[in-house]
Length: 389
Image (cartoon, rainbow, N blue to C red; front, side, top):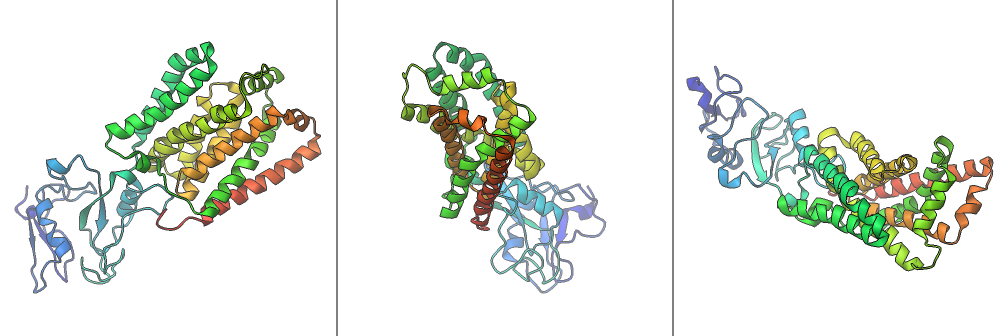
């Protein structure tokens, strides 16, 4: 390692620039020197303890002491101006919501040369100081998200489906609470995250809940009509689904059916798909691709070819709602209302009358449902605050 590669000069004229002759991407900072009368800022001086482990010249974070490596960390720029590398790090360490989440700016400074404690005004300073991040808001990785999906899919196919063929109620309860929600709980426990932080259980404002209610009460019509136009399901499949939802022998009442087929999936399926899966994929491939891929995985998870398109579209809408609101609770509410509406239509056999309407009426219903769904997403998005993003 060159002799000059172990020094970092900080001063009014050289804010955080490496010394001359330093070879990039080698060595670690072992000393901070101030060539001018100005003393290093407290934030820069705090880098001394970490400098001996910093692989400088790259965007990789410092190597923390072994005792601290198990705790997730995020980085912020002193006096800002770190550009794409800072924005990329902010997206990885973001919280529950949309694209605006990221590191906070130190008090008295700004993200781009605010004249704070980290350097001279108007100068970009690449010094980054580690600050602790609550593991509650640290998203899973994409590989963890896909692993959870593969594990849940394998358990469903090889364990829970055979159990459902023997006892439908017991199989559904076991697959939802054990195979989905239980899997999320175990993941949170093994990765030392709180369940509320992993799922982004944040209390949404009333407008966010109103938007979720609009999506849940209207999206089913748009999804059903679009699926009927593109790929209509066979009548025997629809009748079999109706019998599974509402037993003809009256062995299960309406409230029990709502608890089994509406409330349970709204909690357990959202906990997995709009929790670690959506957040993990978003941290890697961005919000738009994560929403599309999460919706596709949600549709494939239901295992029936005729249901892939409608459930995938519903999954996309629920993912948009979760990202727009910055909380998983609106997605749970919309999921519950969607399933509850379908159960009510099947229970009172209103769906048969809806299926007999003409193409013109279907088009009007479709347009109205799309408008209401869009309004619901707008209400959820406009109710979000920058802190939730």
